[in-house]
Length: 288
Ligand code: NDP
Image (cartoon, rainbow, N blue to C red; front, side, top):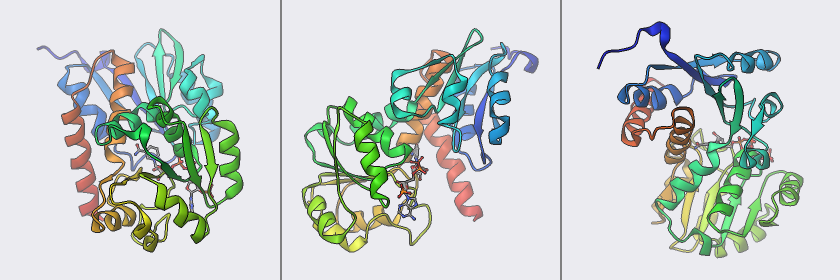
């Protein structure tokens, strides 16, 4: 196949601040290359004040769109022409698609989580869920679980009030806010057969959203999921107890695959995406 000249290549990239650490180029570029789509995945570090200007550049014909990450997932909503129902309910856009100069916003974290979960847990809707965290990712998890038929979720969060606000906003799912004292957590853990860490705790050794001693209360057939895409202390301790676990890497891959499909109309090669991201991750771990 003859390659198109670089001048004709389409562009897509990641808008955030910072973005240098991102695994998205390692996830997306191999998929474009494998399908013979002349497109470059770029990193677009963008300060808050520069966000409107950056988003406006996406209307150009060579732009496929963008991914959006911290801290702009909420702020971009007001800069787009169309926002999907799921992204509006999540209050966050992580994918922008340029459709003939009109910008569409979507949230592929929701489908990404649901797809990653059902691959290892076919009966999520029949499980008692305990969600740790009440931020943007936690909201996405609740919407994803809603698509799988889950109607009731226990949520615990460092700042109780934030969990209460979340509970009021994510209807129709019923949220039972669990206080973060040991007695309440013990009771919630004894019932939970799906535990999801959607806090930002876990990236560093020694960080855990839950005292690890509490894991003894979790039923033996419970699945422990962590949105962090590494072996967190929580996942290591759960596995040491013999519990099945799922880290955040499959979610990252599936949200990226859905974004790729929205930009190109084509299904990406998932295995290549997985290899790309795993290699980039291994290279980063060995460099630190
Ligand atoms: P937010 O900043 O919106 O929320 C952070 C959450 O972590 C809140 O619940 C917050 O509690 C809690 N938290 C932060 N610091 C502490 C602490 N010291 N002690 C207790 N709780 C704490 O972040 P997001 O929701 O956007 O992201 C959460 C995590 O999910 C991140 O690690 C992110 O990387 C990951 N993620 C993974 C994805 C994937 O594809 N695998 C996709 C999206 C996110 P409080 O409200 O009390 O401050």
